[in-house]
Image 1 (cartoon, helix red, strand yellow):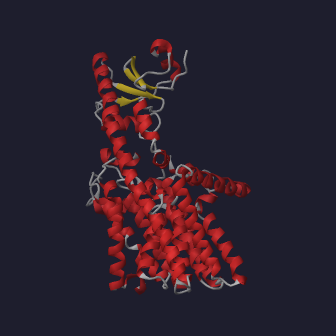
Image 2 (cartoon, rainbow, N blue to C red):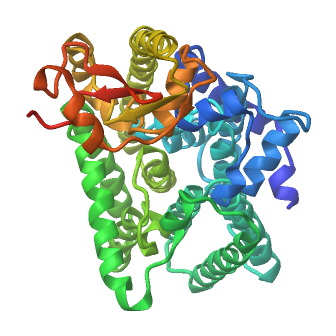
Image 3 (cartoon, rainbow, N blue to C red):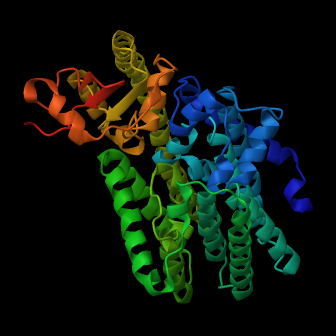
Length: 487
C-alpha cells in the first residue's frame, strides 16, 4: 500500500495538469445551479437515502461533509470535490502503466471521463462526488493487484472494490475494463493475474450482496438489482448486451462528427496495439479488446432489469482510458505516439465543446422552468384559493410550448443524454412545482384519468399552453397535453 500513498513531484504535476483541465472544462457546469431528480429532493427535504440504493459510503461521505446534519445546498462544492478526486486518477494510472510519460498518463486519465455519458454524472449537484470517489476506489483496487500477485493484494483489491460498490455500483465496470487492459498490456497472458483479479471481483460482489441485506433497500433499487435466474441467465446477458449497445449507438448517432472521431480514435488505438504484437499474441489481443468492449455494462449484464442511462455508462470512458494506456505503452515510434496523441486530443476537444453545450442546455431548461413551471404553480395556487382546494393532482407528462421544443430539438445530442426536465406524473413533477412557487400546504393526490378526461374543456386533448388546469371536488388537477385522448 506504500506505492498507493507515496507522493512525489511527478504525481503533483499529474494532479495539477488534470485539475486545471477539468476546472476549465466543467466551470460552466459548476455555475448552472440546476437540480436533477434527487438533487431536487435532497436540497428541499434534506434527506440522504443513498443507502436505500445500496450506497452506504455515499451516505457517510455526505454526513461528514454536512458535519452530521441534514443535507443542505452547498453547490457547487460537491462537484468541485468531484473534480479534485478525478484529478488524482493519473497518479494511479501512471503506476498501473509505468511506461507512460506524464503527458500520456494525464491524457489517458482525462479520456476516462471525457465522454458525453459522464456529463450525466457531473450534472448532479450531489451525486457527482460519490460517483467520482467510487471510480477512485476501483483504481486503487486495480493498482493493488498490478504489482503484487499474492493473497494480500487480492484481499486489498476486494476491500476497495467493496467500497466502490458501496459508493456507486456502476463504477465496478471501470475496474473490469481496466483490469482486462492490464492483462492486454503484457506481452503474454498472465494466468495468475487473471485468477487473482477474478477472485477479488467475486469476493467483493459476494460480500457486497450480503451487506445490502442489512440496508433498507428502496422500491427503485430493488427491481433493478436482482440477478437473472440461472435458467434465464444466457438470454438476460444477450438482451442486456443488445440494450446497452443499442443505447450507445442511439446516443452517438445524434452527432455524426463526434461519432466519426469517436470511432476513428477507437480504431487507431486498436491498430497500434495489434501492430506491435507478435503474430501469436495478436489474436489473443483482439479477443481481450473485444472482451473490454463487452465489459462496458459490467455487472449489469447479469441483472434481470438493469438501468442503461448516461450515468451508468462509465465503462465507455474506461475502454478509451485502457486502450490509450496500452497503446501509448506499446508504441515504438514517434509517429505512432503523435498519431495517438492527435486522436486523443481531438476526442478531448470534442468533449470540452459538448461540456460547454451541456451547461448551456441545463441553463436554458432552468430558465424555462422558472417561467413555465412558475406560471403553472401560480395558476394552481390562484385556483386553489378560489375553490378552497387542499390538494393537487397531476395527470400526464410535461409538454413544452413550440418555442421551447424548437430550442431543445436543436440540442438533440444533449437532450438524448439528459433526463426530461420533469419526470412523469406524480412526485417529481409535484416537487418541481413546489421548487418554483407551489403553495407548500397543497398535498399531492392521485386522480384517475377516467374521471378527469371527460371534464377537459372544448372536448380536446391539447391546449396552446401545453396544459390545462381545472378543479375537481377539493383538488386542483393539472392535465398535460396528450394525457387524455380527443373526444
